[in-house]
Structures are given as structure tokens and as C-alpha cells.
Length: 391
Image 1 (tube, helix red, strand yellow):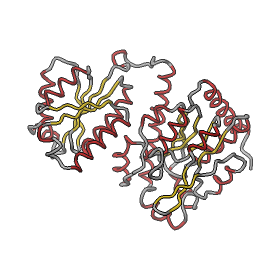
Image 2 (cartoon, helix red, strand yellow):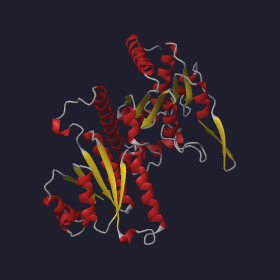
Image 3 (cartoon, one colour):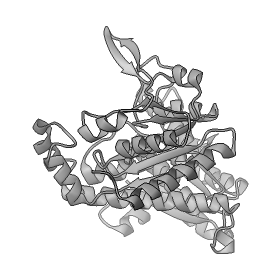
Image 4 (cartoon, helix red, strand yellow):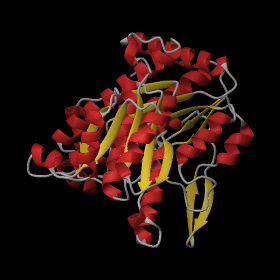
């Protein structure tokens, strides 16, 4: 059964619009199909668009697609130029990966790359597929790719609380904000669960476990809300960028915010602070955001364990991937250092962590660095606000 004429017309317009974007500059363009979960139809939509671009005479290539054996998706691959996968040997096994060098050598105008959050086989040029995509785009090749919302780095803690699933393959949010187009591939929760029950997403033996775990109705409702929110924010960011920053916001908040996140060597707390500050920076369209680590005499390399040092370095790397500038200071006066750095960087919002106690009053009344910092900031003659994150 052929799609209605209106649907064909809309797809033609979408393909033409993306084609215009491709032709506008030498650096490749990036288009991301974002969904709430597996099975909403991201790969199908990408392949549909590849057919549309091919019909418009565009040199398009399927660099990597994962059909998962879904009949509709498999059918969409037919008639498209597909780059053979590269065979990589790891621990005595032959594994298939996307052929990055093959894409760069063929230099198509547009390449389809599925599963953006995928981790490459150890020893590959890049650890993650999103890094492959960055190289492809930098080489002047436009990319159409796909991502589920639970793979966004800054949402890791929220997704863990919602679903109980620790998503290990993640993509930094800056990639979503750098995209030229972000398209929400949406299905109602009931439609998605029906697709799952009909065996259109996973093999039949995996369906019962999926329905009672990740694909619970309440989980999907919350993930759908996250996906819709992310696409809305991405669209707002695009509008602001296209308008040269002239978004209709109060003058005093137009890109004036500068966020300073304060962390210590507490691994879990630092991760939450970094991820939430990243999201705050995106919401405020902050001109800059920083992560400050004040190393006291108690946290020198010879006084903290190797595991703690490794976690700290990983957290600083996470902050860098999310777009932060890293600041490291050695000082036993933590509060004094934070205030000094806040003044030097003209910070407008200070983001700190605080441990959960029995009541809100106990959280702020217990003497400690955060308590002393709040008192000091309250006495300062500045416009610095403080945002507390409990962990």
C-alpha cells in the first residue's frame, strides 16, 4: 500500500530542505532522529529519507544501519547503496564495525549512520561512534543519524531513577546542540507496547522481560516526556543560533549567565553536579560554564586512593565532553577559593552539592563547606545565586 500523496509531499519537502542545508557550507551537516526508546521507527525514517535524497540525485550512502531483523526496516534498505562493514578481530573473535575510512574515501554528500551511542571495538580510531560522526562531519560529509533519549549523558541519573537501568553507552549533549536538525520520532506509549507485543521490536522470547522492565508504561511515559523536551530545547537553540542570539528573553538573561559547578573527589556527587549543571547551562543558553575542583591537603595524590583519583579524572573528562571548562585549584581554604574563582569568572550561578538529610533544614544547617559557602555568598555584595543539588 503506497503512502498518501500528502505524506509523499511532506517527505519531499523534508529532503529538499535538508539538501539545501547540505549545500550551504563545506562542513557537513548533522541531522539527528531522536526517539523515546527502541522500536519507534528511527532507522526506518532515516532510510526513508535516504531514498528521498537518492531520488533527488544526491550521492547518499548507508554507512551503517542496524535493522535488528525488523521486516519493514530490512525492506527499506533495498535499493540503497550500502557500505560493507569492516571486520575487526578482538579477543579471537571477528566483529563487524562501521568502515570509517571507507566513508571518508568514498566522500558521499550524505551518509546514514545508525546507533550514534554505540561503543566501538577497543583499538578503533575512536572509542565511540559519535566521535566517528564528528570526524565525518568535519570532513565535509553530512550525516543522518539516530539516538534514543536515554543515551544522552546529562540524563543518565534521571533515566536510572525512572527505569532502574544503568545506560552505559552515552552521547554528550553538546552533539545534540550542535546538530542542524533534531527530529522527534514519536509513538504513543500504547502503540509502542503493541509493537513490542507483536514481535516487531525484539524476539518473542525477550518480550515478557521487556514489558515488565524497561518498557513499563510509566517508564515510557516519562521517557517520552524527556524526548519531547529535548527536541523542544534543541529547536529553541537552533532558532537562537539562526537569529544570531536574538531570542525573545529578558535582556538581563540573554546569554549572560556564567555557571560555576563545584565538585570534590566524591564520584557520585560530582557526576550529578556536572550533569545537572550541563542541563542548566543549556536551558539558560549560558555564555560559559565551569567545573571547579579545589584540591585540599587531604586530597593530594599520596592521600587518596588510586580508584578515587581515577574517578576524579573521569569526572573531569565527562565535564569536558559536556562542554565545561575545567578549573583546578590547590588550597585548603575551599570557600575562599570558590568565592575568588566566582569573582574572576564573573559567575552568576554557583552550583554545589549537598548530602540528603532527614529534612531540608538539616541539609543547610549542618556546619560544613556548603553551609559556610552559603553564609559567605549571602554576605557578599554580588548578584551570585546558588543552586543546591542533593545527592
